[in-house]
Length: 436
Image (tube, rainbow, N blue to C red):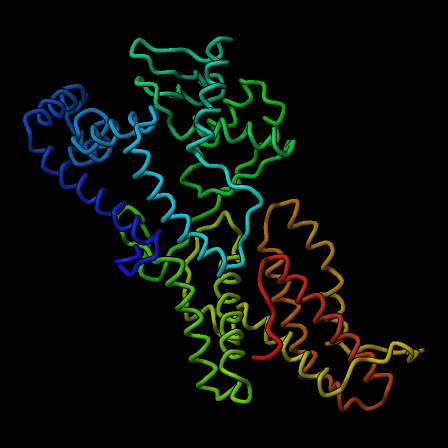
């Protein structure tokens, strides 16, 4: 990475794509081989009406081919065996590549304001998983096939038989996840674990949770898969193996760039320093990115449109930020409301009542979002509150209110609105700017 000009994770990701391309080329060539023809004929002969689709068959057969006939697959398995045996050269390459990836990830996480209390590495948890699988074998929960692979029978749960260890003794994904779940319980006493993973892994987690129940893990009934739909771009679906992805870093740069261009076109922020401007562009751009994704229920697939996400008049993060910034501007001009001033009687106008009713639902919204594991409830509450405030602002003068009780009431309502908007955005990881 240091000589290529790429972030470490991008550098390694490029090789990930190149490997997949090489495998696809090998598979395409292999499908014309006598071995492939024999396999196809045998499959076709078992079709009752002879209508089996050759292309569909070979799409399904690719994983089997990779594990039995592919040169790339064989080399990958050999390297995995060497890694699990602690081969020095293999481990050195692996460590170097991991470090490059982690350095790149940390840079991106820092930009997004994401932190972790603890990170579990599959390179460690697979060993814990193997220990639990051995325990399950000893207790007759799992079984070993003639080729040495270890399996679990989940047919009683409506699932099928699932491999837990390969015939050569190496781990699979679920081996690592078994170990990780147990370590989380040991470290934190976690009896409720939420797996935030795409819906493409629904089956995997059904299997994992049933395996932990068979192992009688004390936390087995508290495992939950928050299965989220994939994010697509207007150009279509992204696929990391094929390289048809948009890196998070590029997407962050794009939305910040759109926020910057929009501000310059409106001629705003000219009175503050360039450094202060860039901090505002960062906050607005990241609000656009995060809000546009979080406003959609996690279980639904969605399309992310960078330009739409920064629309100041749309269902967007910057729209909510604009309400907050507008209140900050009012308070700079009018000052804070006087807490000692007693409002003996006040009859709110309809826009004020609407805003009060929206704000009054904040506590219930947070509770519901927590129960449903659904941050979109908080995001959409913030939008509804901002929309109600904008209406109130346009229809109910604050600084130029007709009398002091009205002015004080409206200033207090504005202060409460700003506090709730800021808190709601804090809960979903979005910062508020003081100016826009």
